[in-house]
Image (cartoon, rainbow, N blue to C red):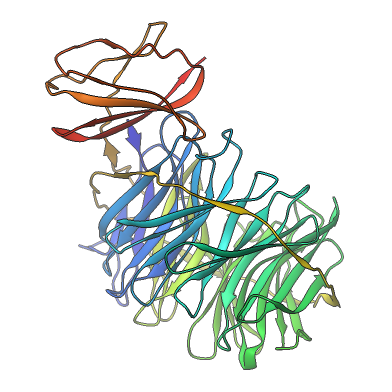
Length: 517
């Protein structure tokens, strides 16, 4: 049984729950689901990416969800590999091709041997190409952010293993072929955010760790070829990290992050740099709990929205800052269905905001999509705003000069793509009832035998081919059998996690993970 949790609330001007309200929806059952990023689509809807537990052990599957302008689900896709597969960030090219990056352990040598994963889909969810980038030292490697390039390709950043981890940059062409890859020649660094700038260059925001208890916000300005123009570290009194970046006025940068001694308290930071990397101003949102920035989104009117999580001001929720030359307002967004976190935002056609993330209530994490009106007001039955204070306190700034070194090899990863079932709508209020989202999965594996035995589901009469694949993707056994044989001995006795693949001309492809101790 595969189950998925997603809460969707689309909030339009002058509408409210309590009467017939088709633009407010709730989805949820029992599995952990996270939506990490979204992009606006030409129909004023959104395409979201994240991951969900498969229902088999603790493995994650990459999840894509497309919603229309009313918040109705058009389709969902789950990418199923023999390991962990997670989608983290996404962009949409001018030709409506979505490029997704994240991490996968489906082609490594173990469940936690992660590689950088980048792939493209069209707006119907069809896979166009898929590339895995694996550092020379092996994982764990992960792609955390990407930006479009002028030639239709993309630039990807994240972290490669390299002793204790270092920031990586990978350039792919429009077909997903790796043109070059570089790692920062400095351990304990990572790229968390990446944007394309209006002059053709790029900006990277990330983290460098000096000692286990001290880290700094790392900011890189790159030219159109990915060569560094300048590098800066923003230094606070505690451990600091930069988690988001956006282009500010006159080719400057807005950098969002956090500062704190670890754990709580942790303050959200927002810093403005000019185009040469000079510090203009900085501010901190100071509270008793943990506060950090997640995303900065230009609003197109000389202002920026900055979202982040806060546990400082009552129940946990999303901080939303409105910024121009200085911070104009700071508000907390809470939801009655648990702690709500905006992991990403996108500007809607009416000037409002789409947001995605997750809520957590009673230990259950569910995906969450919300749309705010142009005044950033949510549906009264779904959420509430509270004003919170903002206290100035800029970080200091210093130059760093890390060289880039070649890294990485690439390999193709073609996952199994599952199309999930149906959605049931309901209004997102304080009394949300769980709505089922299920895909019936019938096991082909007969328990209680030494070797792996296959038993077709009831009514299956045609012949089929079967294969068993290991975690690294290598085929270990294969054959053909008749559907009339109700118990077929494959002879396979391998131990560990594997994948059983069943294919027949008379039915859809069946994919099933199994574990033999």
